[in-house]
Amino acid sequence: MSDRLAVLPQYLIPKQALTRLAGMLAGARAGSLTTAVIRWFVERYGVNMAEAANPDIASYPSFNEFFTRPLRPGARPLAGADFLCPVDGAISQFGQIKLDQIFQAKGHSYSTRALVGGDRDLAIQFQDGEFATLYLSPRDYHRIHMPCDGRLTRMIYVPGDLFSVNPTTARGVPGLFARNERVVCVFENPEIGPFVLVLVGATIVGSMATTWHGVVNPPRPGRIQEWDYHTESVLLKKGDEMGRFLLGSTVVLLFPKKRLSFTPDWAPAGAIRMGEAMGRRV
Image 1 (cartoon, rainbow, N blue to C red):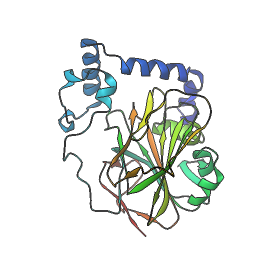
Image 2: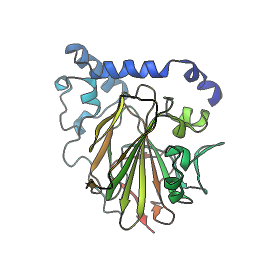
Image 3: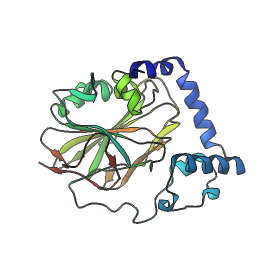
């Protein structure tokens, strides 16, 4: 079956309604039923609870609290690299941005301007720069950490579709990551300049949250919203938590030209863990 045919049902199902329902169920505190669902999920996806700060499945009052569980101290040691991998998951794609085009999959690319919500002045700063698209599967740790030091300057909520972001969908839906709902987080670093982390929503991703704002969505107002942090002091260190998914998705990173050289052992579909070396400064 072709990838385009495989994703056809996603065009037909009520993704917004399904996502709202999933968010409600994931936040429900249903006692033994919640515990049974978590236990099934752990067994179905092979979740390693030994890494969790709290490995007791029965102690989580809701699925969301289980899904966004913190790790025990030392579970993800930070490498001594200039840039760290910000998440657990798999590498979807990475490499150079060709002018303003980000490679998604064979036959598909999308523009940096579309990804950041249409802001030309922001997008042009990443022309011929570097990108990485990192996929978080259901079994993964779902907190997102900083790849390097950064001062937050802006956050932009961009409404959109809620297609799945798994590899089959990435191959079958043109411009997937620039058409799904997303939260664009813009940072400044004194040595590399601006960089961006984009949290991309997906089917049944109940919400996305950041450490400085809390839950960004819901609500879903259906229009672009922006928060300006230039006059505030939101400073995050390399390895600090910056956000989380309530049900998993994808992170897209953007860096300016000639600032980052990816580590040689990175490859598409390769497994990654938060805190590993992602690259060095050029």
